[in-house]
Image 1 (cartoon, rainbow, N blue to C red):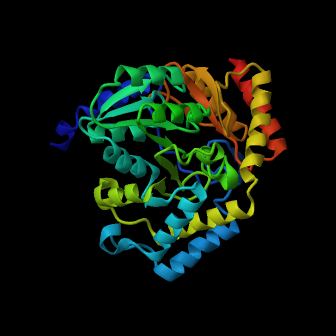
Image 2 (cartoon, rainbow, N blue to C red):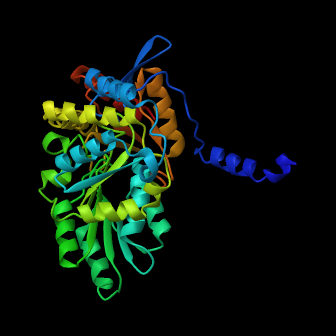
Image 3 (cartoon, one colour):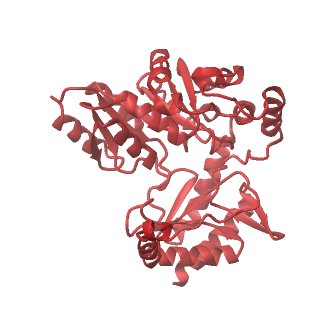
Length: 390
């Protein structure tokens, strides 16, 4: 009987296979920018561990200390008995680093977006979203039932046009964008977007998942680098990328924090993040404070690597960060090039639709501090040869 109820699944899987869109969760023996598989060392250019902190001694020590002090889990949701002193310690540190009055930690970056956006804008309100914002932001817009208006990627003129078209609309207005875009690696024109938000009386929420730790003073992100804390309503980020752990957060006003605690379903109806994860995040912040130039070193390395690819004629779009796309086009070709590189000791994942637009399948390269200059030069040569061979 079960087979009959699931007979609709196989045709979907077959179609995805035919389109070159089938995916599998490949098992890796460890995380980080350099990993060993069956005794062979591979350079991992598909990791978001940008600052190579996954096995940093201090980060691991802070995680162990939290584990020893509090145990394995928080035991409840934050509004029952799950809020531990370490949760509030992390929130105070994040608020300080981000330059906001307050912060609130969520179970993941996805949950931070899913919890915050529906509180900011719901039925009868308007959300203006960059066309390439992360899927979690789009899903969050649907949860809140606000009217979604898309504008051309990183185009303030297009945003202004949309805002003017809806100038007389009732309800709240919210603009959402990323500061570093996760698939293209380009940077949002935050000062111009913030000015438009001010002019049109709109709130502005910026996803800094890939900018936290990698840009700004002490890795505080692009909002702080531009001095826009007072102009941007919400700075969202994660602990799962440069901070090498897990979880998400928003930095905001005290009043918005209070409202989220009372209204954000992704915060209220889930168990609080485990103490060891929070301890690791505190350890990562300690490292960033002690070594404030880590992000600068990362960006200098990424600039050099990107220049090698561009000189060879590869299409890296408008990348300006540690995320460097290499546009291939066809799904099957991107997968084949990725497989060829893996045989040569380079992990460079092929990213295909729907994660990226149709016809723009690519290798998504993440430069990390685990990669030395020699690694970058060797990898660039292998990628150029693989891309030009077909």
